[in-house]
Image (cartoon, rainbow, N blue to C red):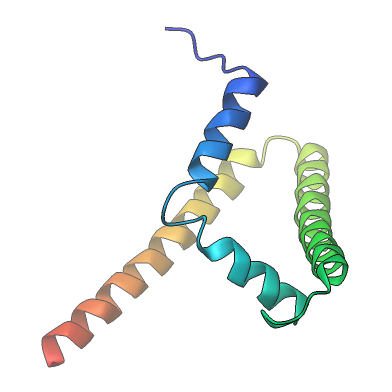
Length: 109
């Protein structure tokens, strides 16, 4: 089975998931929340600029963190498996914490 997906296919899949009934209605409230404007304001330029800066800043932080982490792991050499195992264990531990806290709350009600 061929696992290659073209960029055009991935783009249209993302566009289709954005246009789903549970995501598309939230887009306007997201834009107004990020920009700090209300629905009566006609300043669309401010809304677009605020949203672009928010998305750009968020992307910059996560991209730079992933590049720095990759560089750090590259210089450490063969420690990738150990860090992956520790990270996975922490995620499982936090998931169990959320699961059991919710189960305890449901049992008390």
